[in-house]
Length: 411
Image 1 (spheres, rainbow, N blue to C red):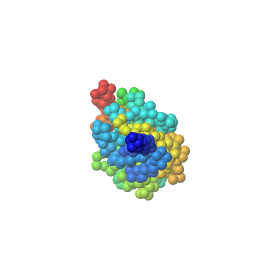
Image 2: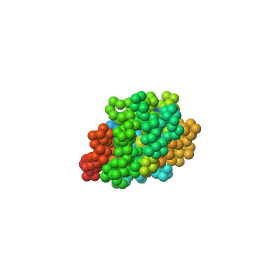
Image 3: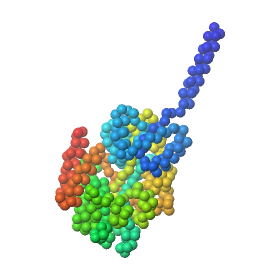
Image 4: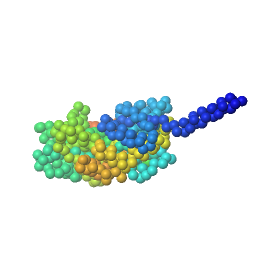
C-alpha cells in the first residue's frame, strides 16, 4: 500500500512539473516573409532583434525575392502553409483580400496607428470597408535634375510650374548631341503626376468607375504627349530599346527625370551633382504618385496577435525614425517626420513635402489589368497613332467594361 502511495505521489509531482513547464513555455516563432533589398534587410534584422529583446517573442525571418512574393504567397494560402506576416506590394493587398486570404485587422488593438500612419499609404489597405494590412514602406516620385547641366545652361533653379518646365527643358535639349531636357516612362503609375497636377481623378470614390477620360485627365496627358511630340524636349525614353530614364540621367544624357528615394544611394555613390525638387505645378498644384509595400497577416496564420504586436513595434515613431535615418527613406509614421536627420539626408524634406501631395490609389484587385490597358493606349498616343483624347477614352471604356464591370458583378 505504501509503495502504491509513493507511486501516486511521484506521478502527481511529474504531472505538476509538466504542467508548470507548459505554462512557462515560450511561444512558437513568429514567421515573417520579407522582400527588402540587402541594405533594408540589415536594418530590418536590427529591428527584429530589438523586438525579440523587448517582448521575448522569437522571430524567424525568411527572405523572398520581391518578384516572387505574390506567387509564393498565393501558393502558401492555397496549402495553408502561410507565414504570420508577409510584405507585399501596395497593389497586391486588395488581390489577397478579394480571395479571402487575409486576416482583417479591424478587431485588433492597433494603438494609434490609424491616426498617425500616412493616410494615402494606409488607404491602400482598405478594401470593401475593412483594413487588411498596414504600410511598412511608402514612397513617391519627385523631380530629379542635373545641377551641372543646369549651371552650364545658365539655369539657376528647378522649374516650379509646367510652363517653366517647358522653357527650362528647351534650354537643356541639344538633339545634335543626343542630350535631352527630360526623359519619362510611359506607364500609368508614372503618368499619375501629369493627371493629378491637372486636377484629374483616377477612380470614383467607390472604385467602380475609371474617370481618366475627363477633360482634366485629357489636358494632363496631352501635356505629357506634347513634351515629346510638340516641344521635342523629351528623349523618347519610354520606347522599347531606348536608354531608360534612370540610366540616361546617370550618364548625363537626360537633364531631368522623375525618380524616387530608392535611387539616392546609387546616385550619391556615383558622385553625380544632382538636386531633388517638387514636381512642377499644374492648374491643381503639384502632385505625385504613391507607391510602397504593406505588411499583411494571412488568414491561416498561427500567431496573429504576436504579428500585430510586431506591426505596432515596426511602425512606431521611434522605429520609423530609425528606419528613415538609416536608409534615407520616408517614414510611414507621420510622427517621425520631425525626427529626420536633414543634415545626413538633405533631400528627404523634399520627398516628405512631395508625398503630402500624393493621391491615394483606390485598392482594386485587378489594378495590373488597368495598367496594361492604359499603357498600350497611351503608347499609341505618344507614337501619334491616336490623339490623347481618343487613347484615354478607349482605355477608360475598356477598363470600365472589362475590369471594373466584371469586378462589380463578381466576374
